[in-house]
Length: 272
Image (cartoon, rainbow, N blue to C red):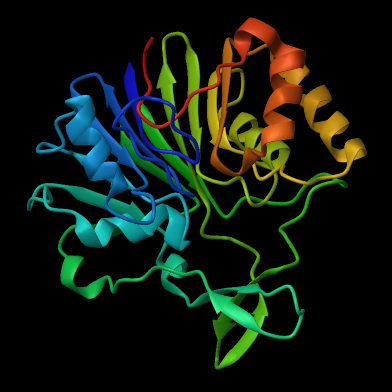
């Protein structure tokens, strides 16, 4: 498996751009997967700098319906009739974040309509099989007592703005001979809830690699400690915290997991 970080919050290589967002290009068993597209054309510019060929993408997966994961798609120039786009239908419900005044909202949803791409789009279920070794999991249940979806996230249904349970968040899972390789955009239902859902759907399987935005930025110490405790129980080979994980939380993960924790940026690649 090869994967390339096309968009991430951080960059440190000459000519490579960064933005608040995520996009990862994955190559596995002769197939090409684009996991999210960031919020702009940064993923395309970085791919060009990195010499990553996006002209033959088999599958595009959108982790959830927020602008910083889907917005860049409106700049996509490599879409062909055979490319399949996997997304939850409820990802297109208008989405909002509560402003700091706790009274007004800002739009954070997908800035494009799906109808022009209807021939390419596959609306996913709770468990969707892409091929014999690639799966998507969504509608992730909240099963522990310390994680929940952020209270500042909302959606509009029936002309009413209501809390968003983020049922559209989906996890990309590769079932390999070395274990499960997991890709997560933001882990809005909680990284532990997400990983536990994977284990529940793949009994007797071991999680080998976790690449994820973990939405841990600013969380209380107790929650962080419980998260680390759960991660320790997995005995994974590597963890790659990205995007919304938070700088301090990434440092804590690096301190805890040492050589198993990889700090990657826009422009970085890994061959496993």
